[in-house]
Length: 73
Image (cartoon, rainbow, N blue to C red; front, side, top):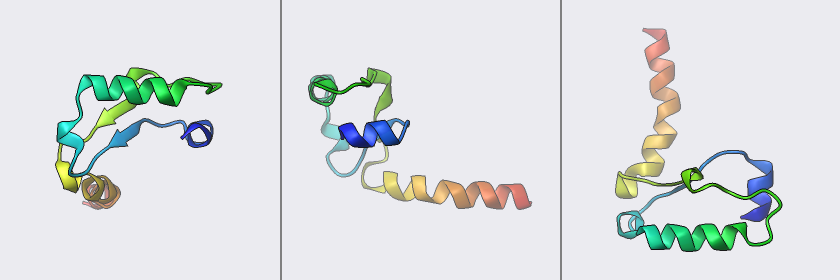
């Protein structure tokens, strides 16, 4: 995760079947462990929890094509 944070400057989205069960304590735990020894730390606002359960990755992947379609209309 530390190397990925250096390469990609984007929020981390946690999604899938278990996303609805993540609590604030879980996010704080992840944030603490990600930032340990990292030269560039993550802010709490950069960790997002998906709200669409198992369909979050599919929705995110489809957004490109939806936007492309809207621009063509």
